[in-house]
Structures are given as C-alpha cells and as structure tokens.
Image 1: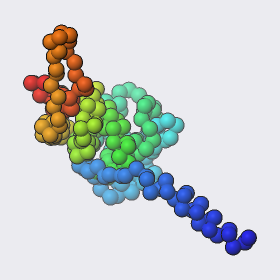
Image 2 (image 1 turned 180 degrees about the vertical axis):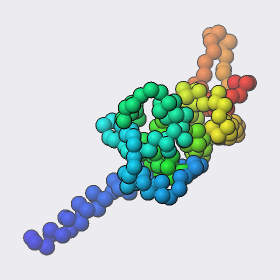
Image 3 (image 1 turned 135 degrees about the vertical axis):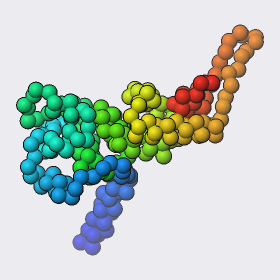
Image 4 (image 1 turned 45 degrees about the vertical axis):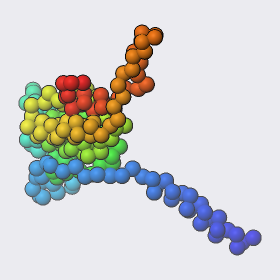
Length: 220
C-alpha cells in the first residue's frame, strides 16, 4: 500500500501545474522616456517620495516632480491649491497603476495581455500619450476579424480618433491603416433583397463594416 503513495502525489502535482501552463501571455510596452537610474532607484526604495497614489486601497509612493513632468493630468492636479498628500484614482486597478508608474519612471512596463485595454483607458485618462501610443500599437498588432468591432468601440469611447497629440495620433493612424488593410481580407456579404416579400435582410453584419468604421472609411 505504501508504494502507491508517490504516483498519487505525482498525479496531483501534474494536475496542479496545468493552470500555470495556460497563464496569460505578457508583453512589454516601450516608448517612454526613462528617468536616470538614480531616480528610479529612489522610487524602488521608497526614498524621498512626497506623494501617494491610491488604487482600490493599495498605496503607491511617488515623486510629485516626476509625475508632473510626465503627465498634464498630474500637472493640473498639483497646480491646484490642494495640499493633500494622497490622491485616490477611481476605476483604476492596482496592477494597472503599477504598470503606469513603471512606464513613467522606467520608460517601459510589462503587463499581461488581458490588461492591455485597461492600461489604454488609464493612460488616456491620465494623459500619458507615449503609453497610449504603445497600447494602440500593441492592439494593432493583435487585431483580428473577431475583435475589430471591439477595437472600434474602444476608440470611439475614448475619442482616440480625434486626438491631436502627436504620439497617439501617429499610432492611431497606423491602427486605422491596419484595420483598413485587413478589412480587404474579410469576406463581404451584401444585403439581399427579397422581391417577393419586399424585405431586406442580412445574415450578420459584414466584418468589413466594423473594420472600415474603425478605419474611418467614408464609403461604409
């Protein structure tokens, strides 16, 4: 009986390790301007920090000067007559805020692919143009017929197509070109008119429609 123990343990170990194999892939977003290594070290060591950002109860110690020089959002925040030492960021989760701060200090950040949309929304909200541009490029690289409509909805929600900031505008232009190029490969289904019934019907919205809309196509 004692000899049967190890195989059972090995089976449990194999089954418990299977979820790790299906872990979400990660990606690194580049494009920021990193601060000097000494400044980054001060941030990592929590030294000489003079402000606290809070996301869902989790606090992050930061330097006002670094945030002010990186984001118009924080420039306006610190320019006001407030002397609060803590600022709560609603609707931003801790891993997202951690990625944003890493991008501000180090010029890059590593995230799970599942956080890409949240990081894009947070970077647009906090006016981090370089990070928003990096997110747009990452989304364009992962564009498929199945997510083209979601990309268009996200861009419409954040009014990214109307952005005049140079970094984000250039990336979104590339995103629209990608949508336009791939829309030519999607099968088009024209509307069919039934003369006998006098009705117009379509089995489903053609994929080219969502892609063309996201690309700003006038014909669609």
